[in-house]
Image (cartoon, rainbow, N blue to C red; front, side, top):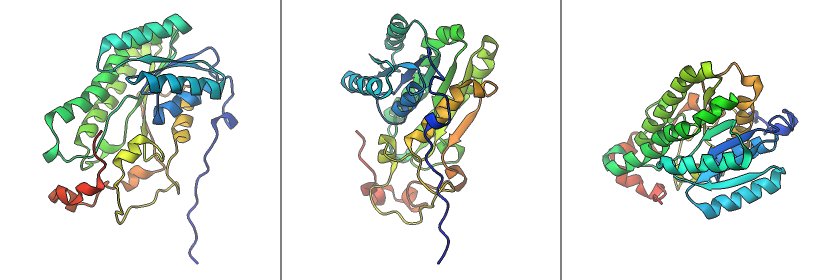
Length: 292
């Protein structure tokens, strides 16, 4: 009988970090109504932070804010906004300041993605993802920077590992996330003397998220490798990295991109069979979730 691979445990941040680590601190998170960014927000709140979550769908945001508050005992408020529209971000920031009086941490998490080859991607599709991910990150930085300077706070930008290699069907997101990484590095250099840190978290495959659902082929695809960590990632893995990077333990870490992926990038594979899927995209169209 062959030996089974080791599977790394799923850690609870409250067993590692102090429960009041962020007491009196305030988090501002775009895309915090669902998925990874909601989990990142919950992790911060479980350690004493209050939070504002920002997104376009107010009903979903309001429900998420209520559930986060009930689950953590901290206060979370919803602020409707579109990262492509700077005026709505300024309103969300003003609402946060009116409620909590400060912003200490910002998570830039609003994003869009879907599978499509360059040959079939519309100009508008490419532009839209760039506007949400890259320009939206810039707009959020502009709207919050004065407050992060005042609190000597920090940014985490949610990126990806897709652009570390050429990933088929992901040109739009690869370009957008490369821009996010570059913005974070420049922000770290320019604002470090003002007491501001800026880092990137690049999640790998995270189970149970809308992003993973959109990117996973909708059928059996052969030769998909396992992960060195022995399991898929969970939202809590990203939450743990968030707590660490915002904590004082990471005070000397800035301008960095942290891949939280169980070692997946070292076994980087395409979402669909290569080169067949780029030679004949229509043959694999049935494996791709339709864009919403």
